[in-house]
Image 1 (tube, rainbow, N blue to C red):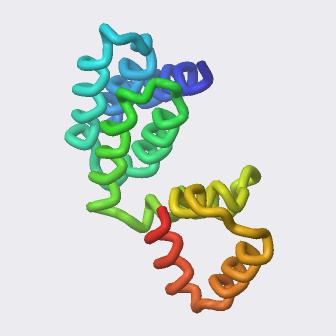
Image 2 (cartoon, rainbow, N blue to C red):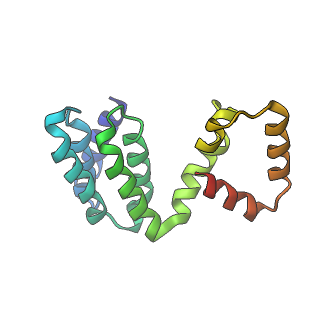
Length: 151
């Protein structure tokens, strides 16, 4: 509901700007009810977003697509990820600038939530702490690469 109201405000505020068409497309996606009947139209509308945007709209697109991933309606998730991939192809630094702080400040971080390989194996707390410690001793670029590989 907050995203919908925010998009309505943005649509009104940017009525005569270049981003107006993009904001209206996002508003239409957000206003569409998440039902089986609307899967196809929502998917097509989400896939069209990169065509309506430019480099100056990337932060808005990232925030919107991350918001779509929080909706409990998994048929639209692949399209949202596709848009994020398209944004990452042209400006990957903006994606990491937005996502990385959320990843490292995750309050629900548990050893079981690190990746699927950790969920399938039994790990003791000591092993987890040892792994975490050894990874924290890596250079910054190596830690980022390891995080990227695990995601």
